[in-house]
Length: 229
Image 1: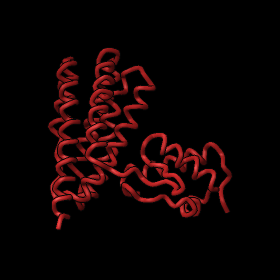
Image 2: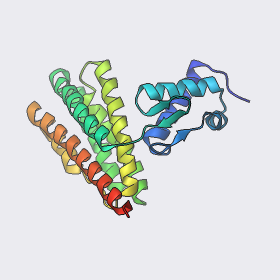
Image 3: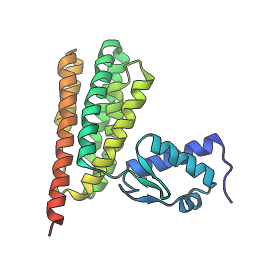
């Protein structure tokens, strides 16, 4: 029996699907089988189709004519473009947060950084398991940096771009033998914020995003080389 197509239920399916895509449970390029998703979530086709359409609007899945939907495939060209836009938007958000944010915003950033640091220090298990343990705290830290910008639209755009980048992070962790350790970069951003140095904070954040993308591209190149005959 399927659940009725209520706004609450549709939103719930959307969030669950979104998490599956962003976390890597649904892999880049994987086709979404709507009938199986209906059975999995116990909802009607209209609910699943609306949720998947919203994911397509956010760039997390792609609609293909006469072939349905698939998780957005990854490419170095897209990663480069995504990095350029992320640097601009996240820098703008942080600059506005430092202009308009108060001590409550700063406290939120400090708390988010503490949670991220603890998650990174205590994560155990295999490489991907450690990544999963830290990913939520990492997302919350970046969200906290933008939280004081006084622009819900900017915050929504920034989060969507961050989630698109998460597709690359999750994919790279599964293929890379090494793991990036950006704890010092996160700390440097916080230190600049607490010092009231906006230019330094923005520069540290931009450098952090670019370095992450460089590592992702390097992981992709290494994987491609190993797969070559």
